[in-house]
Length: 250
Image (cartoon, rainbow, N blue to C red):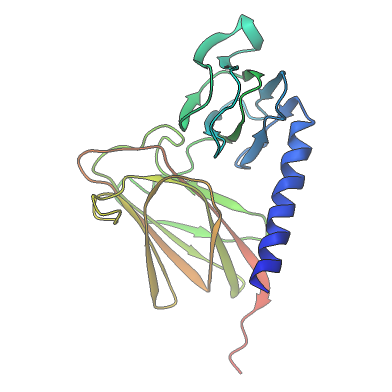
């Protein structure tokens, strides 16, 4: 059964990638992570904002197998070669992350294999790092919380708290879409971390450049973010919304 589920997941990801590679002009929606994969031929991509206040978080991920042929990958702030060249590489060999403020970013690719995660986002810390907890209500429409200044690097020595409840006594789904929080020397969460508490359970999260969705369910959530004196990174994006399953105590 697990193999069957895994096969369906891989098929879904593949179809999503194929859909994106056919769209050379991509309008990114706020807070929606998007993946683009190079189809192994010369191609240009133009990514455009749908929110003037947001900025791009972009991460290139090389293929698992080394490049067999030479090529070029160029990343610009702006449209094509008229923009500012931010990065150029003959063959993608390592993960590379950028934050870009311009209204448009573009990529020119000639043969190297890679995928790119993109995210259009802005600060949704909502004052939770200023000393007092922020109380938020979950609705059917998804809302978001982030580290301060997201997707730029979060400040050092902050303590942020969000208290998320449902005004309709319904379960809440909380999803970690992006996680880039300093990790300890033994891959543990001893420096910076997110602490998620719900219904008597608690989870500590940290990790570097993690785009995998992790979803928690509960009747309410208390989310804390702690950072130490050094080692800041890009932070996190968490979405939450109200589910349509009503609690029944019978």
